Length: 394
Image (tube, rainbow, N blue to C red; front, side, top):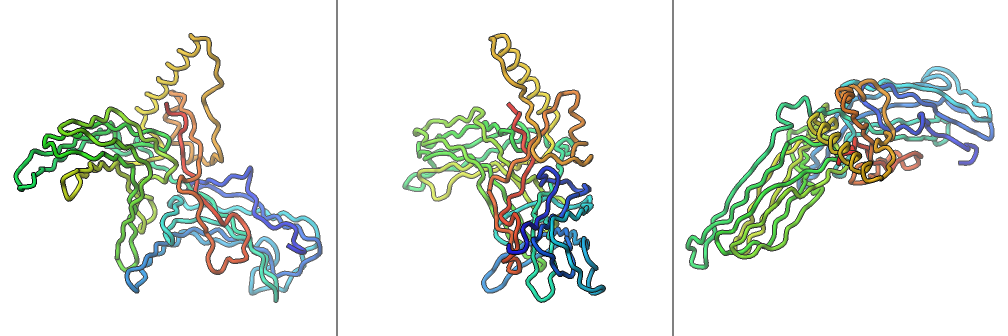
């Protein structure tokens, strides 16, 4: 970096997950070998969302801006004041920003579709390229499943398809019936799937897939809407014998680190989750398809916590009686936000010894957060949001 040995944004203990309403505190660190003339050093905190896709030759686009704050840490804010000189050595410039309470959570979807939060520090140098450092961070939404009336209700779906023989005569039907014990889950939980597919037609079933999917609806400024579907997890049963039934007796799909449903606070992106069942039919032009809508939250249902605490206690009692020893099962929180709003929903579980969640990077991995104006910007430009994850569930 030549004269600049160090230029970066530093926040306490590497914290990168924050909640709406929380205060972000940190320092901009500058270390230079020789004195540097500059207009000043600034830091900005920006939050916005964007959706963009192309239909034919037309670009559809929607943008929302939530936060754009700027602080001058050294020098005088333009256009007032003369240039200043920063002496050689190491310098620390403290800052803090307050995040709005209605800020939507972080989301990285299809290219050009996101809710993103970041800070950018700039050394503004006259007649030279500015030096810039960008830090992208996660804002974690709170979606308490206990506040959703039907989140604990079981879901069931069934359908059938009539089969015909080569003479177009009725030849029986294939029926499918599936259920899950509740609608609301949190990342780290497993979805137990129950059901049966029955063939009374002797036509044959080539297999059955049960998919955990996300459907994201994007809305442009023009009112145009597009939907993207993403497969997250899958269970598969092979071919079913003629006239037989395919039974699903609680096979489990574990929910990875994914954003919560709805994406509250953002009006151009809506997140929906489903369990989708597809029965592959041997002698039919179209397969049999069913779907169960789910809600993915960040605070689990109290009934779920009670059940898991009981199961863990039962397992510990068994291990103790068998002479086993084991370290505490409670895992410390990674990058745990310290805001009161972050911990308040979990206080309802104090009497149940509720283990705290951890925060895991999104299962879909990192994306490039740079734009055409940030080709020479340093920082964590490859970024994946971190989401609430409960790895203590049995």
